[in-house]
Image 1 (cartoon, rainbow, N blue to C red):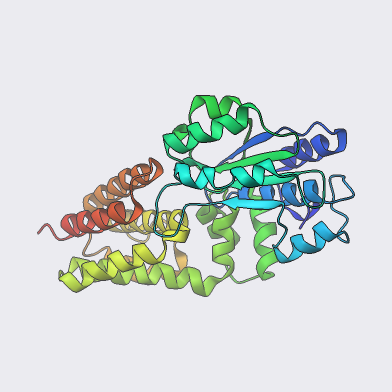
Image 2: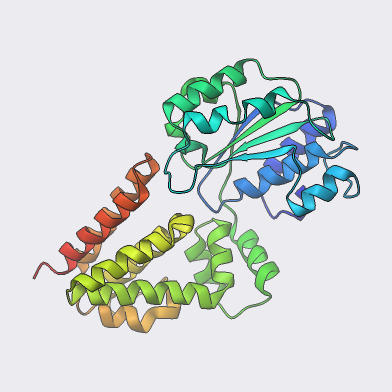
Length: 332
C-alpha cells in the first residue's frame, strides 16, 4: 500500500512524502489521533516507502525490501507492542530492540521502529527510549503511534515530529465505505453519524452483519442485565473482553446504544436513532431503561474510557463498568 492508496489525511501524506523527496526525514515521529483514524496504516505506508531500496515517496514494488514488505516480513520494519496479557509496554520491551538499533538495515537506507499504542509505555520505558531519541543512529527512524499523547513525557514529545490526524470529511467516509463494500445498503447519513469522522468505524459498518451483530449482542446483554442474574453479568464481561482489540469501536457502540436508549425513552419516535439497524430492539428496551438511567450509564462509560486511556488495566475497568451498568439499570 502507498500514500496514493490512502483516502484523506492529505496534509499528512504531503508532509511525509516531501520529507522523503527532500531527504529531510526526521528520526522520530509521533502519530497522534483516536483509534480507527488511520495512524497505523499511514505509519506502515511511510515505513514501506522509507525501506524501499530505490528511495522516493512511492516504493518501487520490485526490490527485495518491497517484496518482503508485501508479506510483512521485512526485518528492517520492527513493531514494538505490549506482550500478550499485558496492558503496558515495559522497559524490557524497549530494551529488547537495542540490539536491532545497533545494527545497520539489511536492505535499504533506513530501519524503522514502530511503537504501537505508544501511550501504553510506562514512565520507565519512556526514559529508556529517551537515550535512543537523544542520539539515534542515522539509519534509525522511530514512529510512535498514540491515541492519547497526554500520557507521554514532554521530553519524548519534544524530540519527535508531532503529527495530529484530523477526522475525515463525510465525503471521505462515504468513499472509504464504498471502496470496502460497494454501494452497500446503509443510509449514508447514518453511516457518517456513526463514524463521527473516524474511518475505522465506517469500515466496521462496511460489514453490516458484524455491526448489526455487535449492536444486538450489546442490547441482548443489557436486556438480561435489566432482568437481573449473575449469568447476564458474566456475558457482558465476556463481551467486553472479546472486543478488547477493538475497544474504541466497542465503547463507541456501547455509548451510542445508550444515547439511543435515552432519546427513545424521552422522545419516542420523534428523533431518528443512530443505530438504525437495531431500532426496534432499542425502542423496546427503552421502555425498561429510562432516560435518566441511560444518561447515568453514558457518564460511567465515559469515565471508564478515560481510565483505560490512562493505562488502567482494561479488563479491570471493563468488569467494573459492567457491574456499574447493572447497578444503574437494576436499581428498582
